[in-house]
Image (cartoon, rainbow, N blue to C red):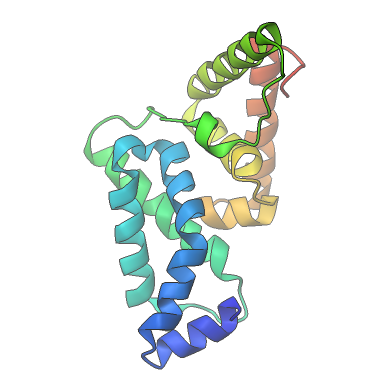
Length: 179
């Protein structure tokens, strides 16, 4: 069942159809919340986001894609959480659980890869909030510019400029091997 059918059936009261959407997008929603700063509370953020999405499903524009709409709710919930706990600039990235990185067979190569990932994560955490959000959405979550704009509720031009500035800072910090 595709998203459109699941949404239509959910609106008719079929909870199993909404469960299919939850199953399809839970991992992505959790990763989004974690990368945008929810840290250990990502599960709570995701649960609240799915509850809000269900309650507001009737206002969802059916011609629009569901994924960016849901991720915008996740981003808003994450923002609310980080604002309320007073740590707006904190980002708990768990790249090891979210990236498809294959470690080299040799121990030296594995150590170098681990060091590179660590330097990149530190550099991403150090970006200004808007640049960090844009880079995380575009490159860690692999969203398009339009989807990132929708998730963050920014104009596409802001996504482009924030991503560009963030990548430039990463190049300065860790070199061209990452950006």
